[in-house]
Structure formats: C-alpha cells, structure tokens
Length: 546
Image (cartoon, rainbow, N blue to C red):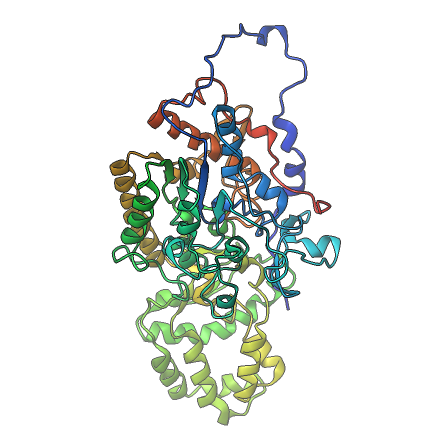
C-alpha cells in the first residue's frame, strides 16, 4: 500500500523554462554600452603547466547519482583545465567511463546503478524512462590507462587518499577498496591517490576533500553505519593528520595549489526537499484512514499521558498536512513501561479483540506496541529527511510484516501496523535529528578550521565553499544572466541526486576557484574577462544521451 508519494509540483513546466534566462538575440539600443578593453590574461606567479586534481565525487564530475562521460567532461577540474591551458596549462587526462548511462560493473555484474533523469514530476532512474540498459564500464574488464590528472574518487574521505590498496580490485569485495579508484591504478594497484598525484610532479594542484567525512554520516541519517571522521589523530585516522599529510606531501616539491573547505551538507536538497509533514489528508489512500488511526493511537496516547510524556502523542488531522512518525533514539526508551501499562489495563483485551484477535493475545500485543513505540514521536520542522525517504514513506515494510506474522498476527493486520512513517516509525537512517545535525555542524566547523589553517601556512588559495552553499540556500547566486539556487531540479545548481552539482553548478564553482587563484597568485581570470559563462553548461542531461 502506498499512502503518500512526494510530488514535485510544476517542475516540468519550470524545467522547460530554464532557457527563459537567456538574453534576447537583439539588444535594444538603450542597452548597448561602450566596450572597455580588458587586460591580457596572465597567470601571475602560478605555474599551471602540470595540473593535477585530487578529491572526491565533487571533483570527479559525479552528477545525477552517477559518473558518466558527459558529466566528467563538465567536471570542475576539467573546466579549470581549459582556462589553465590558455596560459601555459598542459593536457588534462581523465579516467573517462565507457558510456553516458552511468553505473559500474565488475566482471559483467552491475555494482553501481545508472544515472537519474527527470521523469516529468521528479528524479527517476534512467531505466524507468528508456528501459533496461547494459552498463559497459567494467572495473574488471576495461579500465583506462593513466596517468590521470583528475584523481577525484567518488566516495573518498580524507584518509582514503593516503590509503595503499584503495584501488586494488582484490580489495573491493572486502570493502577495503573503491571501485572508482580501481579504474585509475593500472599496473600499480596498491598505489594511493596521493602516490599517483605526486608521481606526476604537479606544478599546480587542486584539493577538495572532506565532504564525505561528514556527508557519509549525514546521508545514512546519522545511524553510525558511516561514522564521522575523528577530528584529531594520525594520518589515516583523524582529519587533521590526514589533511596535513596531504598538503605537506603535495607541496614538498614546490607545487602551488587551491583548496576548498566543506559546505554545510544539511543545506543541500538531499536534506531539504522532503518535508516533515508529507501526509496529505486529501490523499484518498490516507485521509479515510485517519479516524481508525486516531482510534488506535488514542489507546497509546493515554499511556503516554499516564507516563508523563504527553508530547509523544500521535494524532492525525483532516485539517492540515500531517507529520510522519519517527523513532528518536535520544528519547528515553519506554518500551517496557508501555507494555506494562497496556497489559494491566482492564479495557485493553477488548481493544485487542476489536482487531479480530483473542483476548488472550493482549500481553503479546502490549509487548509489540511497547517495542514499536518506546522511542517514537511525531516529526517536527527541526528534523531533516534524506531524499530517498520520499520513496518509502507510506509504503508497507515487508520485513516488518514478516516479523509481525511470526509473532502471531494475520497478514492483513501485520500490514496495517507496518506502514512506514505512519504505523511503523521511520528508522534513524531516514532522518537527521537535531542532535545529529549539531554533530555534523561541529565536525564541519572543526574540519574547516583545519583546512583554513593548513592552506594559510602553505600559502595556498582557499575557496570558501561553505559560504557559497549558504548563499545558494538563502536566495541564490547570480552569474551573468542566470540565478542559481539550492532547490532540487528547478534551482539549476544541484543535480537530481540532491547532493552533487549540475554542470552549471560546477561551472559556477570553477569561477569561485579562479577568483581564489587570482587573489593568491596574481592571475587575472576575472579581470581579463575569462571567467566561465555558466549559461554554456546544461542543468540536466536528456534520457536519450547514451
């Protein structure tokens, strides 16, 4: 049963109007201004002759949930390399994938899915639009030959760039290697990302790493399956040691460079698109059930009131959008108390019989309700929901159904008590609680302090990506004729996965990187009129792109 489906109202119309920002072909005479001769482009003191980029998915060109040729060609470092080439920069080689489907295979078996596309109402998998595809980028069969100037590895954290064997095919099944990096190591499978970078003796580098040190924790709802990187520790353990080792090694030969800090990841569309109250009473699959649901939760709410926690009460209304029910591990676990109060209630057996169960099942049902609602509450606007939660809210959890059936409930009754976000509280992996958001903010601030201090000591250019994202999230940024915001799909800055930039977003970032390089090394990309025109880069890729 599907109770609620997230709707992207009007996105098809808005997306079609992307070109509405384009200037007219002919300007009115009043708009014609006198042209000023710009200075000649100069590199200042920077040497771009051998540029190498290190980082994660944000520097690999990852977009729409995948890595594919078109996205790599519009990657941040590749855009920068085209500008560097104008003043002495050399060739820039990337580990291009084999198709524009996206996804990865290993020995013919798919291990990463193809890219997302716009399905008319919101992001959907490519195959839902064009049908099944064969992912041809196979890490066991057809890896490209290096060396590669773009060493951006999707999923990499700070310490991964130092890890030997991180690109060894034999380590992938052990969870010790990254399949994207396997494609780059060639005949030196145990070389680290840093090894491959310094082995090319770069004269200039860019490093944007640390996003995944907090993002992995955030995208898993802070459930600790992907923990925050410790702030302090030796290289390979703590962020300060790893980041310091990266910069020290990269600059040891005199290389210059530009680094970027970590944005506040909780401001990206992945966490701001799904509302805390998506349950619409006008939905015919939900609204008619509200009286029944309130009858069930009425029994539980009396228990909450008796236990002195009336704020945990769950009640739905026909008058407004309704909040989902979540599990909050910061709450005191009242499972045993709830079960005890219900089991002792003289009216509870009759309540159990109303579900077609014998009165003798009252202790069992009391225990099940206690275990289910011992740490639950309705969501508030302070809770953030990961984008994939939109596909499960209102769905029947089949694992929960099986568990309830095993406890003696009928298939039908088990299904009624297993609806995600309604009768089955959403698990931690779907929601970032305020306490978890605070942990992320604290770690981000600490990491950014380390990045700024390390960059300053080494004399490197620094891009404040954190401030940039804040601007995108609070009104947007204008570049030329285009305004970009952090809205999913319609904002133009973020791709369909809600995490990674669009090609236009990467172009905007490239301009920020060049501004930082100008300020540190005396180049004049901005003053000479050689910034990127973001309008030359797309905001989405067609499903037909293969």
